[in-house]
Length: 112
Image 1 (cartoon, rainbow, N blue to C red):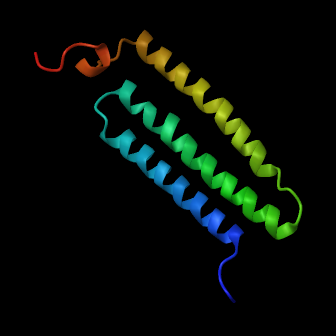
Image 2: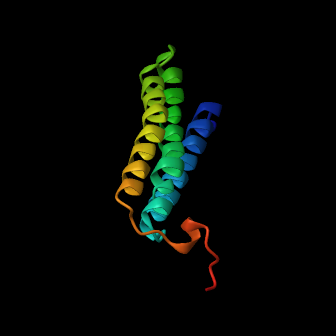
């Protein structure tokens, strides 16, 4: 009852960091103007957010049980492998379909 241990502070920091990244990714998905810009929200920020949440879970359950918790490590591994591949496939499909892009995405000057 004397205070929080190092593990509780670390888990809290990882959960807050992961939540912040997930929030930024969700806001980017909703607010950015076109598909190619919106693709960065879930593939970059949200991947880091979920990765941080899963690492926080791994730390918590490893310390609680006294043995390494490797289930979360597998989740993190598959997340970091599948997110870039799926983003690449979505971008290629969008380019094939010739989706409309903002001037910023095409590299054109903004003031025309």
